[in-house]
Image (cartoon, rainbow, N blue to C red; front, top):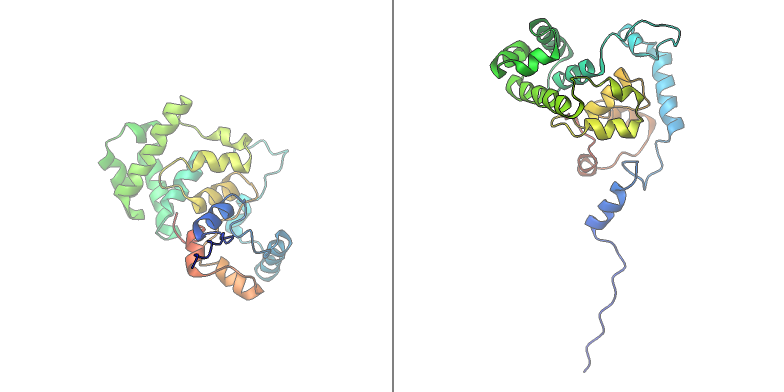
Length: 222
């Protein structure tokens, strides 16, 4: 008796589906919420309820007529955000101030013994890992740009900034988004499970399973 011919499978494998999804700028292209308008509605609800926190006022778009230099350089923002990983805000602020006090210029950090840099940021936790990553960033910028400065990022698009910063070890999507929003005043938003899932549940938006969120980079790390 002749064998039945094999049927052509039209369903995509999970791997191929993931590849298609990864080509989209949206983390969940098959879901249509929340929309930009819904995100703005959440922002407006929070502002109406709490007002603008005083600590965040300095991050608002500066007045174009104000010629005062930014409070922090872009590199300051990258390093301070890296130091905020896996610790409290107060500890990360102390670590950044301690680092700047011990090494007034970034060249000093690059040229210092690693142990001295670790000691300067020890109060922020994970001192060995963070010191190594900071020095690696400084070395990379120096070798590529000829100076330790990231101010050129201010002239780039969001996508270009993401590509530039993502090359550094220890700088993940959440850290990049923090730098974009707080230090470059760009339209981006750091996503983590502490705030976004709570907001999504409150507004009734779908955000996927725990496994799918991890696969899309929606987590509390970096």
